[in-house]
Image (cartoon, rainbow, N blue to C red; front, side, top):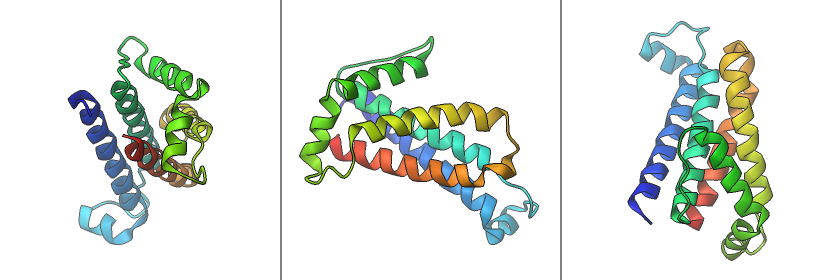
Length: 155
């Protein structure tokens, strides 16, 4: 794997760890006490944002490994478009078939996760109180876990 792709994969894993740690800081009262946080303080909006960036960087790593580079302006939009093209052309699905005999993960589900998390990042980071985000934060962590795991197996 090329060094830039590897860097994006490292960033993806770091963002995922931040998402998990923000979830712990939001839900575990022992962690809150250790960190000196108020009991009602939560960071669910941050969980969602970090999970999105984990998925985004993982997609960037995959694309870079395929020789595709996206950059600003509109880097997120371009990355989603290029990733979508690979899925729609069946390239990603073929690689997944090699890894999973039973097609445990379909390329379409990965694409759906990426689109969903991109949309949620904007909505839940800027528009909704953090406390209301718990179910979405949990979903985001699971989506990021699935996305990263699948892409790492491919790479």
